[in-house]
Amino acid sequence: MARLALLAVPVALLLSLSFLLLRPASPPLPFSRQQAASGPDRRRLLRVYVAELPRALNHGLLDLYWSLPAADSRIPASSDPDHPPPRPRAHSPYPDSPLIKQYSAEYWLLASLQPGSSSAPAVRVVADWRDADVVFVPFFATLSAEMELGWGAKGAFRRKEGNEDYRRQREVVDRVTAHPAWRRSGGRDHVFVLTDPVAMWHVRKEIAPAILLVVDFGGWYKLDSNSASSNVSHMIQHTQVSLLKDVIVPYTHLLPTMHLSENKDRPTLLYFKGAKHRHRGGLVREKLWDLMVNEPDVVMEEGYPNATGREQSIKGMRTSEFCLHPAGDTPTSCRLFDAVASLCIPVIVSDEIELPFEGMIDYTEFAIFVSVNNAMRPKWLTNYLRNVPRQQKDEFRRNMAHVQPIFEYDSIYPGRMASAAQDGAVNHIWKKIHQKLPMIQEAVTREKRKPDGTSIPLRCHCT
Image 1 (cartoon, rainbow, N blue to C red):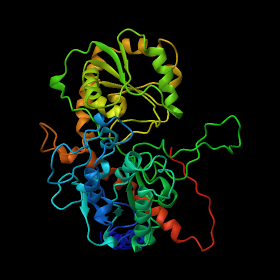
Image 2: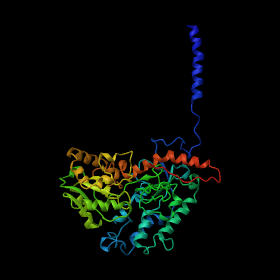
Image 3: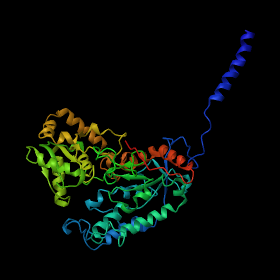
Image 4: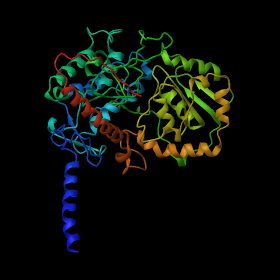
């Protein structure tokens, strides 16, 4: 027994030594004062620093918008719900005009970082940029762009001279890139909200390394005319956006939310309301329209979402089993989120679509995806939809009701006041940004070790 005891001592020592030798080395220097380079701890909050910008670049723009005397020049004066302003206001809310309201994420995200906000429990605002995981840039880029498009000189938007939106873009970029926080990371940990496809139009190349919050990548793609294969004319060359670093966010839906208990008979098979003629990928919409406009139980309406069009859309979506979502000028539109709010099963015909919060929710549980090739076959789509079993449609609708709160931006959600902040769009966006941190930290670390004079072409694989 004594011999066994003596043998046990060196064995124990060997095991202890092996454990010490095999332990991983200490982690490298932290990305920020409290952030280990091994990636974010999912149990802790995302630390956000709000960049210092003048009020004129965010809430001051709202004051300017509500002081405009004339209506939006792009639409009939009677269709502008905001001008003249309907009543005196104690504060300046985000516009009600559907052209702008659908892109209101910039307003709600900044609001979630204000003292006393409860809409982003996944976030903690920090006072020192060196303690932050990300830097939020509080510029209302969409509102700035839309004001130039609707109230600026005709044709001035794509020019720099006489363009107030460009002046604001330039001021934002100059202020942000001059700050030490930008120099620390090359901008890779900065967050810009660019929900409008033309937001920050003139300075996109300068902010390309940042985390961009967009509704899709449609406004960023360009054809690669120099493709090695002449048969791959549709190849996309895009070095400014990527699912690795950027976040797809939902549009703000324009129609009221319908609860499952309010659901009634839906006599129409398929419903669509919108513009027939679009550009680029939207040509699919025009062909679909011609194929389906005379189909029984299918309603294809052309119209603008003014007060009359809104009421028509509410009625059409709430009385239809399926709502068509073809690509427009870009792969997505607000229509998809209106359909979810109306419990109308989305039928998505958009091959290049990217969707918000994938990995958190499964769209195949409440939406139907159809390839453009199949949708272009006469009678194929309507025959397919007529054969979807009632049980499956009911299940889709129950699943849709379950995810409705995820697409809500404000916290005023009837019947779900307590839970709205926890499962709303704003908090999900911050969670998605949190998921990007390991890749951002890796990119920053790789950039630091590159010697001066290194020239590496931009490249980005997003799928």
